[in-house]
Length: 331
Ligand code: NAD
Ligand code: TDX
Image (cartoon, rainbow, N blue to C red; front, side, top):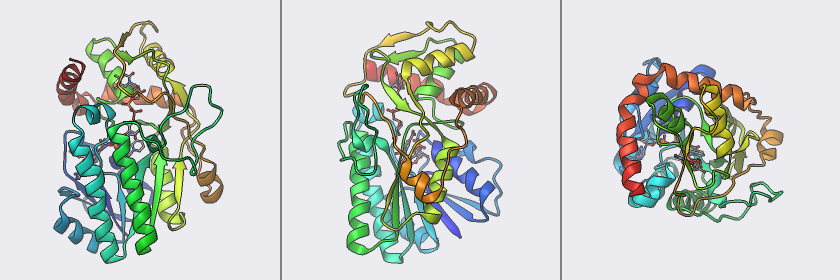
């Protein structure tokens, strides 16, 4: 198969491309606009005979049509992905996440191409800390931020196109990912790299917000399972039972890095900050037999910290601009 991977130079997309090359015989074409969030170095070391890189925008109809016409399947990761940026500058979230997905849908409709849409659990809004429920495939959509509203919009487009035009499409909604190649704007890499450059970690609000962590490698194996064996038109939630408060995660990072567990600052909360996400992944486990491999979060976190320690050349060029953006947003 020849698989078109949009957003393949980003965090999860690049992890997925490495996964495909390791676990399958498929050829891969990466389409990525190389925004601030991309890093070509995340794709270093992949065989040129199997992985082709195309720099371009998913909103470019002609380019997207040409690439889809010559592919057997599309796995769509490309997005503006960061909530804090969506509060400061929502425009490109609407353009990329909504119009970009629309552009891809029209192309796969024309060519009858298999389409997998990668989405987030944030489309469901948030849960109270003491709510016994978790998100499932039947939870109503209730997005809170411009980012999650545009992802929810893109999911609804995929659902409508699938029903109206009988597309061969699937959707997955995953919880918070961590692992190598994640941009230093995101929570876990931001705190690790703050400590590495001698800045104090920063926790929003009271730090009690809960995220449900999954290693990016497990997200990749789940997306591949849905691409291969998912039922046409179905949605699958992906999660690894990794609920932890931001405070708990930060304390683990500080302890693993040999710092005092109270060595951080509480800062102004994110507006509209979702309280808790939690995924019930029964459907993908029972229907497709998928299981996460990285079930020990402390071990995954320690390996991720080692990766950032050892790959300073990958993240150091991004750090100052990222923190400057945060200073502007906090001002
Ligand atoms: P990321 O920001 O690290 O990467 C996004 C990639 O998309 C970048 O390489 C960027 O250059 C590319 N891109 C952006 N706009 C583009 C455009 N107009 N045309 C072509 N390429 C464009 O994001 P990520 O964290 O890897 O997330 C990937 C996908 O997974 C997103 O759809 C996101 O909503 C979803 N997701 C992320 C998480 C998470 O925890 N990070 C969890 C669940 C779902
Ligand atoms: O410096 C920080 N301090 C802090 O306390 C940052 C950057 C974040 N936080 C908090 C906010 C969240 O409660 O940490 C939590 C995680 O924040 P992010 O890494 O920004 O992730 P989140 O907003 O939860 O969204 C992520 O998971 C779902 C991804 O960015 C999305 O793309 C994905 O859809």
